[in-house]
Structure formats: C-alpha cells, structure tokens
Image (cartoon, one colour):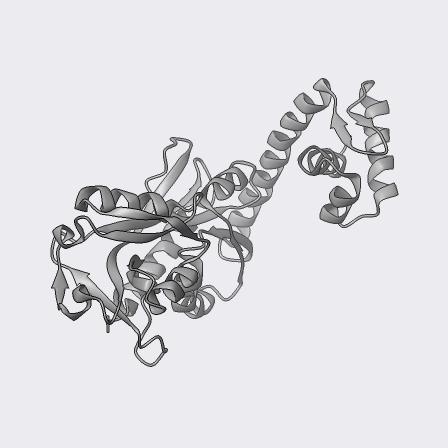
Length: 302
C-alpha cells in the first residue's frame, strides 16, 4: 500500500467516476483502475463495485476512503513540518478565498506578498465557504481567507480587517442624494441579494432584518458583479463590501455608494488554518503583511 493508491481511492470515492478520478490524479484510467485492483488484492476486500453505468463504493470502501483522507492529511502535515524547518516561507502554499473577497482583496495584496515572501509560491483557489472548510479539513488547502466567525472549533482564526458595507443604489433613487444614511432609512425597502451558498447573503439578511428591509424574492445574483450590474440598470439597491466598491474612473457612473452612519454594518474578514499547523507562525506573519496593506488600500467611496 502506498500514498498514491490512497489518493486514487479517495478520488474515486469523491468523483464516483473512473475517468474523472483519473483526470484529477493526472493518470490514465487503466493505471488508476489497475492500482485500485492491486490495493483491493492487498487488503483482501472489494472497495469498489464496478459496472458500465456507475461506480459504487462498498461499505468497507467508504470506511477505508475516510481513513485514507486522514492518512493523506497527516502525510501532508509531515511535509509541512519539514518545510518549516528548512524555510517557512518557501515552497507552495495553497490559499482558499470566498468569491466575495478574492477578486477585490487579491489585487491589493498579491504584489506585496510576493515581494515580502519571494520564495513562497501562492496557489489561489476560490470556492464558497462550505467547500473551503471541507478542503481545509482534508488538507487540500493550508490557509483560508473568508468571513468570520466560522461555526467550528477545529480551526484557528486570525483577524485581518473589519470591512464596512455601503449601500449601492441607482443614482436616480432618493437615498442616492444623501451623504450618509442610517439603517432606519432601509425600513420597508427591498434589497437585491446574492443566492444561497454565499456567506455574504446571510450577513446582508442580518442587516435587512435589523433595518426592517426585505429581500427581492424574484432575483438572486450569483456574484457581486451581477448585483452591481443590476443596480446600475436601476433594478434596485444592494449592500456592497467596501473593497468591492469601485475606485473613481472605473465606470458605472449610474451607481452611487453611500456610507452608513455609525454604527456601520460590517463583516469580519480573517484567516483560518488547521489547529496545530506547523506553519502557524508563518501564517501570523502573512496576516501582518495583509493588515499593513489593507490599512492603506481601502478605497474611497464616490
């Protein structure tokens, strides 16, 4: 038994398709199938039920695949420990970010991170929160940047910054002419929100509940940029995190961004990593760098 065979087993368990599992592992389908057969012979049990239509894991196959994930995670932890002792800021670092953070934070921080840690290769992955957490558990990612808090005690948190929400409204709307608004100004108003799965949707719903606003039940956006487009077309208003607010000269003259008077609604953005990670000190240093950049790069509103 070797780690590669365990990787094949986990891939088949998650993909439930030999061809997709082989592509994921960068091997041919006959190679993957042959190695799994070899693993079954070594263990003396059938792991996978094979048919022309689908791949079904046996009961023992499911249990062994779950254990294989733990073994693979621990093997990565061993490599991580060795890396830290040679150079904690060299090699690959797989970082996951949520979609409402990645396209707005990364342009601000990546130049500085690559300059501060020139031997660190940052691999960036964008998924919704639930997927990121599962990939962190499985050690497919080492570090997450997402909205906090996360309802679990298996990871360590590092705060990065507090990000205010602004109201994005069409310039012809009555609220658009005000220099500031309060949550009370949203009472009985209708808001455009993201679809299910985005943590920002839940945060925006909390603001709506506090303000007495409601969501538009006929439309849910898949991204902040879709929300921005709908606001620009005069279809309604929404909440926009400050880093996602456009800088002057980027177009969308039909949108006005209005700050809330204190206390401003906001979200906490931070980092998450596996408890006991050998790279905890490195992550703390990276967090310091990000905080320094964000302190000077929050865009002014228009």
